[in-house]
Image 1 (spheres, rainbow, N blue to C red):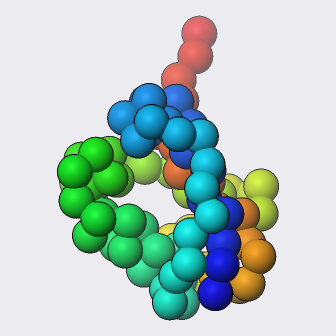
Image 2: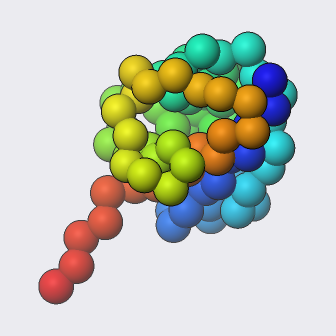
Length: 83
């Protein structure tokens, strides 16, 4: 299936792009993250399992166990703090 993946903040800076269309066989957000990590390089460094990464599915904060669907929009971003 094809999904749109968006990257924000430091993840976008590391990956070098704000979004991309991804062809995936992942059934969940967690599996998609693992597929991206498997690309290696900046993807592995930015999305590594030891890093705190937030995810959204179709513009709503999401648990990584949620299922993906064709045409979904997935966003990855670091936790944001403000003051």
